[in-house]
Image (cartoon, rainbow, N blue to C red; front, side):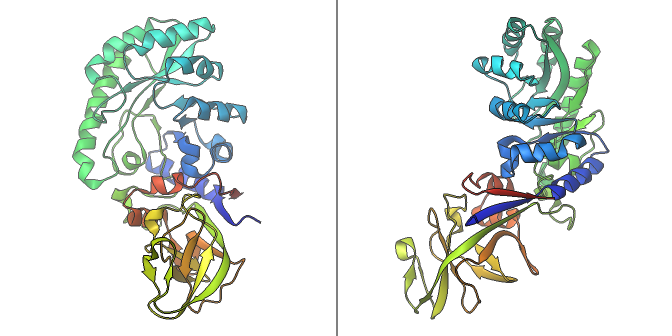
Length: 367
């Protein structure tokens, strides 16, 4: 039995996907499965929901190849430009590729011609993210360049929204969408496209998407609401439960320190459990003397510094012993720890919480 494991509820992912699709007006879904499906498992997630989606979004060519090797046949879109030396493998494995700058057109067309393929491309418009994409005023010329290359097929037009997940970003997002609509009109005046998509989870849940026929959810499908939607109780199901096992419980006298740096000393006589998980598994050192675990419906504090392979928990009079599993993420009785709670303690976002869980932590799948 593993000393720590991440239990992923594939059924919850599927149900969250249905919720997000409904909020997106029933549009087709390109599900973001990059970064190992946000830490939940690239291939198991993709296989489970393949019949629910139009395609998948990945960050790297290697991720796309892994999906193809696992038998995934749906379109796979690499969400950022591929480098020239990546193009042969990307084309060989039938990945759809992003045109993010004008000079990419010639390189893509040449690589496709060398392999005797016609490659689907999506033109990315930078409407305010400032990261990847052509400027809106370049859309017409780049579209003409793509259409003129017989080895390229302009399959889609896309953008990425920078502030759709926060209420304060509403007006900025509306302006991004306005710029996108204008660019799409210029593109589709030159040639028809199959897919028009702009919306990440925040935009799907909070914005009007007129003109789009596809959506690109990520974090919401994995159970965490964007900041703007944290007040919508019950909107999404938590997907992951992370547990770790106790290896020792020892009495600690008042005033005695535990862990590196002696940063925590027992305020009174107590019992402290050593738990087999640490920052080597992705349990952040930022949770030192700040995090908590659950056992038998009780909340128990993490004390002292998080180590590479172990944490220490003040268990007091809880009837916990070696071999017992505590919950780091998930529910026990009426208590629950969410990725959002951990993110708040770390000063980050829930995306990072699950992405940090390393491959040293085995994944177990339930549905």
